[in-house]
Length: 301
Length: 259
Image: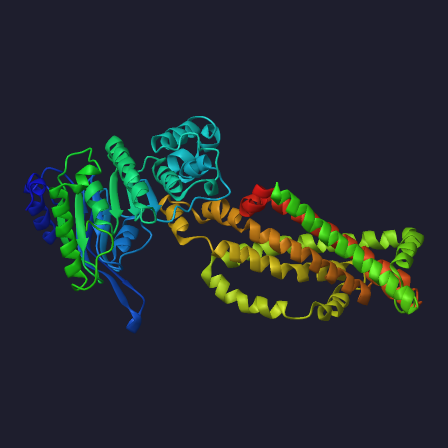
């Protein structure tokens, strides 16, 4: 085990044991924010049935930044959709804030690889869209759209380096800029939980690294609980506090390890031996998970 | 700048083509000695347009009225059906075969039925115009709504947006370019519907006027009717094109960037 991992090595054993029993893990925290209890997902019927997610139990604490990595089609996104209440588990339960999903009044922000900004709205109006929909804000939307809400959107845009772009339309922006605006849209309603599904996957390396740093700043400022699905191991190790490695379909969690690097983390840090070692360790896990053939997408080396 | 010059060049080419066709027509009739009972010359047609204008005008107004009322009914029903069919996979699969069946019936064939039900006159013309313009609108609106990116729908659902929220904020605005594209097609089709109905069963409208004129061998007047129809059709098409570029300019940003 590397030095960086050793710094927080006391926790994972607890965690792993707690997961096996399906009970609340870490003693220091009262209740997990998100808990998967023996959740599995199957698609289709009869012969065509596909098991997307094998029985999985997983707990995530409030304010944690968890990355899910694994081979393509392993059910990472399925896990994300379960938390977003976009998909019902075939068996088991998903609890958020102690209550079954769907019954919880938490606010969720979501961002996909495809920025899906609405082309007929300005960047500012796109960012403000959640305020028009989500409960405590929607009743005030008419009154505050030109005041407080507008300022809030502008402040967020400035934070990601898009100051002055509020009046532009999505097609006037580059891919990286659209993805920044997409992040703003996912954060404007101050979600309790942020779901990211390969949000930086379509960007070039330098833009991606820039966005990692922005993402880190945003997270350090708000400490929102984040669940990040990615196949970029460097991204997972740079951003997350904890990395869950999933197996090939039907997905299960093979490994669950904390990432102990001090924040704020810099891009230079990703070339240091500890970081590289963690990447290699993750990579070998995934190579094994997909049957030891081929090359893992992205990753360290 | 190149773009503007290019636009002028394209426009002037199409205007030159239109004028060229009429000049060719005029000259061909003159040189070939074609009788005006077979094919009147454009100048004769325009002359009869001016001569009979007081008689033509109420017919033109009637046709425009039945077309627009029928078209309006078609638009309302078309949007309702399009939204319904586009928002639900089940509705789409259930209703689509029926719609294709109805749309493949030649609309001329339903005119006698409308006449049977409502008598000859304005109502069958309105209904024929409506029924003929519904289909393209339904198909286009349904397509626009059904092709919303699933990721975007997920984002909206995680915000706990209701179906209505999604429809109003995402699906409907998104289907507007499809809708306006279908309006341009539907309005010209509505003309076909109303004129066909007037020809078969009415004593008013351009269709009826052309029938009467042809039975008295007033061929220039028949062609004058055609010109009126073409003029009305082009006018409405242009009107909806302008509305389209106003409302859905975001979908044609390349054109906007040029002009």
